[in-house]
Each structure stands twice: as C-alpha cells, then as structure tokens.
Image 1 (spheres, one colour):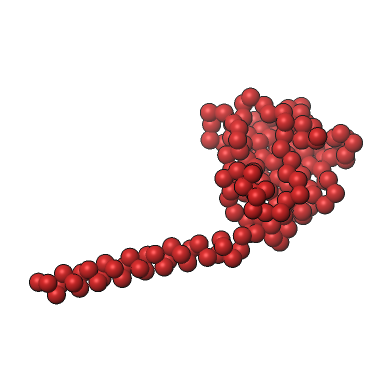
Image 2 (tube, rainbow, N blue to C red; image 1 turned 180 degrees about the vertical axis):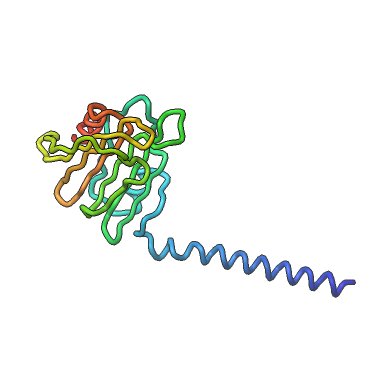
Length: 175
C-alpha cells in the first residue's frame, strides 16, 4: 500500500515539474523576443519597455468612447508599431483605433473597416498632407479614417464616427 502511495506521489511530482517547465518555456519567447508584436497593459508600459521616441495620444476625446485604451499592442521589430483601441462606451466594439508605425505598409483595418468607401480626399491637417477616407462600416454606421506621416512615422486614426469628429481627434494629437 505504501509503495502504491509513493508511486502516486512520484507521478504527481513529475506532472508538477513538467507543468512548471512548460510554463517557463512559454515565457521564454517573450523574454528573448520582447520587440515582437504583443499586448501591453498601458501606453506607459510601451514607453518603458520599447524605445518609442514619441507616442501621440489625443487630447480631445469624444464622450461616447471609453478611456483608457481597451487594447494596446506594440512591437519594436521589424519596425516600431503601436495600436491603441478605444471601445465605444457601454459596448464591446472598437469606436476608435489609432496606429503609429515606422512602415507605410502597416495596416490596422481589422477592428474598424470601411465597408463602403464614399470619398477619399487629400486633407490639410494642421500643415500636414493627410488622406481622409469617408464611408460606412458593415452595419451602415458612419466610418472615417485619416492618415498622415510625421517624419518616418505613419499615423492612422480610424473611427466609427463622422469625419468632423474624427478630424477633431486627429488635430488634438498635435502639441
């Protein structure tokens, strides 16, 4: 009887060691590849862990959106990139998505996608050449997106809102 008990105890210890080893093995990629795209708790955590020169956050924030960002994703390699998603108040869907990246080909159309583009025009945004896109989301709600470059950084702001509201948010990102 005692031999059976010690075998069970030995088996349980081996399972615990195996589970602990797998847990540690799961953390290793994050420790060795800190710069790859991953989720962060806040914009401050991104600033502390990755070498972003400047992170633009709007000072004007519509009341129908929740602060702080519901999702913050960032990477340092192969190029710096940051995505901030803000949920609509009381809802589960993204109402505003702001992305900043070191690559013009970086796209964040996933959460707010313009299903039907009605107009795409050049727009002067506080002395910068921006591209404004206006249309509707899949559910028929208004969707807008504006994008521009600041040196080597490409910034895109997309919202489930009218272009006027979107432009207010984008303009408030300049200090």
